[in-house]
Image 1 (cartoon, rainbow, N blue to C red):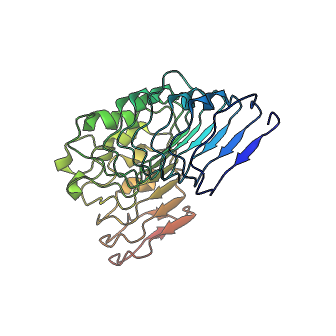
Image 2: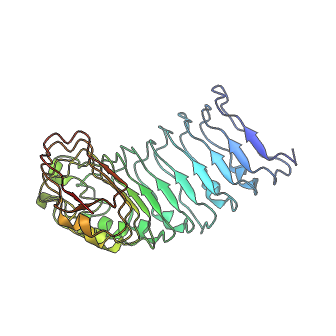
Image 3: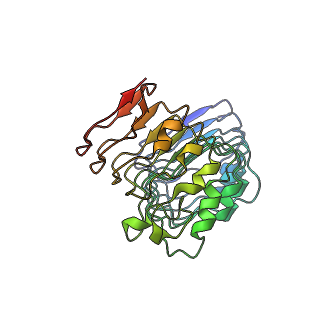
Length: 308
């Protein structure tokens, strides 16, 4: 077993228990347990010193992780996607520079530990469709290497006591050089006017969505705000500050017009407006420099001006 590099149990639906790690397995780099019936991992997994990838995706019986997982000094990718019974992560007791990708999409997570700040090297954090996740910890602002944060389909609750609107807005806009932010399908807990209140709103949720907190995300290259119930008077008021933005997706929203600031984004190449059924007009100057302008399903648009 000393020379073993890859161990793959993917899809072994009757595999319920991973054995204790014994002997020298320092060469094991990738461990695939996705789609198995495992409920927990042994603490001896910390002896897999060379492990770079741990895939536990679709382990629907997985209920907990040992804290020693976050002591694996070589681990770069941890996949926990669709672990529906996983309600919480263990506390991260020390700095972990190696972990770059943490996939928690479609899990049963109700909260993230404040100690997530110890994941110093984290580049990608995927929380897509974490329906039970009520809030983000303020310590997320200390993930200074984070480039991609995916919150699509999360339904943050305004009434949470863990962290307030201002704090979450500040948290998201304090990343050092974020490049991609996806909030597709994020809707408020009660009404459309609360949409994204805990994600980006810098004002009272009753006033609608004001994205003024985006101004500090000037390194952002991709922004997905599709299906976020954005309405007229609450659309991208400070978008012109996103000077690095290349891709913008505003599909399936309820606004009637777009701000002229769209025309001042020097690097914007892709603008997606699919199924914005209330959209009646676009800014008078939509440059042909756009490599991709998609307005399929915008049934109320009367005319589009295109100039060189």
